[in-house]
Image 1 (spheres, one colour):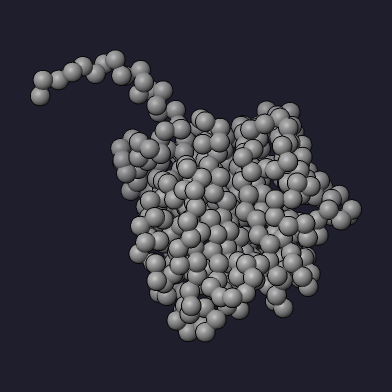
Image 2 (cartoon, rainbow, N blue to C red; image 1 turned 90 degrees about the vertical axis):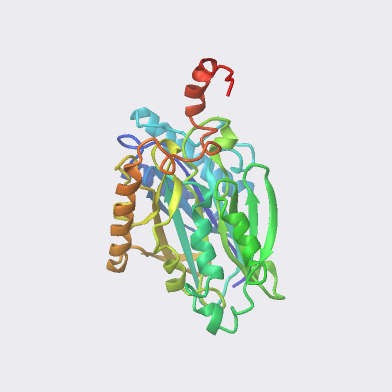
Length: 371
């Protein structure tokens, strides 16, 4: 079966009525674009969907990570759709495309990407998660629970293939530095980092063992921070994540159990507020209340000789109704704080929003004090 690469590349290329949703014809345009590439063998398979105002592509191919041809394929598709969005005067058309031309790799050009190459197994469930109105570190808590918390993942206790634990590659999203910590032995040190969600984000997770990295890779998250790349506020990062499941990795049920809290994440309105991450079906990935609250969708695939079988809409399940009810209650409570912290994010997180422009006008109003 050999090595296969799954590339999930997304971009906000324009939305209907503010920051709510992608038009169906925009999805169809990207599907047609990728279908032409599939027919000539550039990619093996593809799937296109949206989470809120973000257009998401999932592509399988045998060209490895950071392949210029595959990245250009996604870039050209986003440009086509963005031009259509501009012609219809859709909101924030082309927002995530920070350049007019492709530079050989979408990393650093605006689109978000999670990409992994692995040895295809006898049966290979692969899960794709996509968020809207939040930041890369939104995945810190659920991925910690999935890959390090035995109260979430029973396999860490009862599966002989998983009891050795997992290794976490952590990114400092501002300094572009990384460190690898191992669980369970370095669990507390790991939490000391990833609990600071404004700075540190989980990038990759590997199963421990002597196999190759392509056999041990378990998860990858998009950690690009759009505001840092652009130097100003141009929208939230809205990350994507790829997770492999079963047979030495957490089961599908254990993975989605990590999203049952509705934990607080940064983003929401103007990228400046904290709110609950609500797991929803694709049908309800349309954040409207105060441009939110933040959403996450999950799609389950089987990989078969590179072909994407599926998807299953993972959160389209009544067992998540109570989680969504809790998220709405949390949203009510947080909104009651108005412009006050902890609903409004910390000063560091506001650095790339429009608030510094407001505060700058007030600087001259402050005078020395004798106290």
